[in-house]
Length: 525
Ligand SMILES: [Zn+2]
Image (cartoon, rainbow, N blue to C red; front, side, top):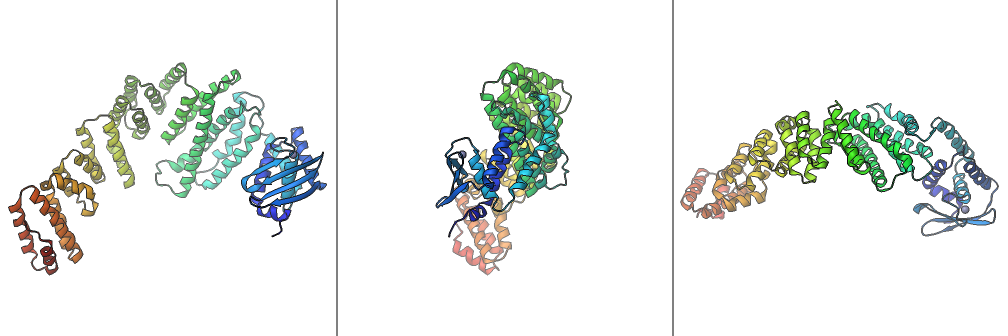
């Protein structure tokens, strides 16, 4: 098919829009050189400065030649977002812009776009960074992110995410021009964004482990912010600092603290943000000591937990114990991420302090977990942490008693590991665990090691199969009898077994199909 500029524009509408957006945010009408560049590109389009267009196959590529201050050739490949110009002048030379404008003008009004670009700047004028101080940065970033604070809990996350992505666009022209300053500015911006979006995110996500699509969207937004924050923090931590940035780092430090302490909910995420800033940006011991003292002086409930974080990273078990005593163990959800951290650091001593603190409150916390899969994971997690912390087995068992039926699987494994087979079988009995609820491997293991302990349990299952009164379940019953027979033989209970199986046969004599299956099974020893 013959390709024309019009068709090319039609096919790559989306990419052209994207280019237009990038141009919009890379050039400011109030900067004279930039404004002239845009005007010049517009006039190239208007006076028809193009000598011709060629279209190359494969990756769709457009080659345009412009007669302008000597001939220049621009190459654009939208599908791989490639652009190139023979003039070699920067990312957006006037020729590339002209070609994108030419494409855009096939279906849109360039004049309108130009108006929009200028108007946006007037709006943006309200948002200007008056001077390079943390206060001026905070001032403009607070204004910029304010609309996020005004989104209500009932609003759709799409609105929230759209608003946030608009801010990502609007913040670009506010950023300092020097590359050394850009990441620091973005750090301030991300923190403002998180602070402004916090109550929305918190209301949507608190205690929501089973995400609806809406919650999932908010969670993804939050993850993205944290990831960006971490990345910038990490790269800034590696670079030498300009002396002039000192005031900014000092301000940021207290902003991070305020963010962590004054916001509510999602403690684990607040800790993650706080910890990543301290891990990368404030490594010196003196600063950490000072921060710790401030936290201990703060009377908010959460301050103790951030203080505990510092003691943990320093391996100061003794001070951690003091903080733990002061804070108490009721806030199990606050302690758990710290316990994870201790386990990760293989600091069994600190982990034991934490687990000891929350131990009396685990039952009450467990009661409030509403979904059974969450309860299941919670039980396994807690027991794993107790094991890491070298807790006596007796205390681990105490908790299994509290969990009841939800803990059967974990407690069952616990008993099997200790070869307490009779207790395992009793546990299965007590909670009436169906045959299909057992791990086949576990059953095999018990039969091989202590067949006698599991006989009463298997008898119960076999009787249940017989009650189902169909040939298929009779066969399952006979398979169980065979297992029991092998077990009886192994434990030398031949007489007992023969008496048992004869009794069963006699008892169900009238069930013809069962009698046949039992005959085929050759069940006597
Ligand atoms: Zn060029």
